[in-house]
Image (cartoon, rainbow, N blue to C red):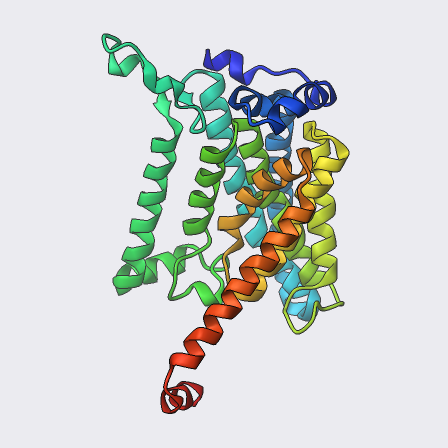
Length: 330
């Protein structure tokens, strides 16, 4: 019953203790009960709070943005991010609300749960709930088609830039905008985790990433030679941890998930990977890692992967003619 799945009470610590052993043993039923870790009513409060925060940021930008741009400097950067991140938060909360309330009212079936596909053959197709996976892949394809059209057709590009001026970054002029990564990132989390955990991952991206960008715009302490600032990473970590704890995650699990998201967000920025795609999935993995710590295995596997990569690089270098290497270096 989809309505029953969406109606959970705030019982995180009890569920955590009761199912920890079974889940570590790999029980699928126990993994599905991860949804009970979070309070559905608090998830709703977070969604509506995200809408409110996005609206507040947009209002502040509307009232003070013009004078801030004239001031210039760090203040102008902060107000540029206010506009972008207000829509970022509102858009993420729209995705969350469609998914959450679609499941709650029986219109949509969770993308994580394939049981809704086992409806009796005599049941009318119109009586079955929509598969959330199909709903959001349709949205992804529509957005990708729009992005492809604007990149390939100058007239569409002019309309797009004129309509969304101020939201598009310079690097997105000739490549896909963030929304083209946001939707598949959200869908990946929906497919990988129960609905409440997936929605929390989208909220980490919507609100936590906004805190990171605003902290970076206002910050002064750089992280190495990157454009990221320490203040942005601290903001991302604190906001994500508080979101997780409020939603019902045990404090240790919330810290682990927030830490992994913050670290992943920083790495994504440094290597040029769009964080809109990876942060929701990092939240899902962070929750699992927090529930069943395997940090030694994680570090060991990271070292093994690094060793394999270096070995492959050495092998390629050893088998590549020197003159070709020189041309590549030039």
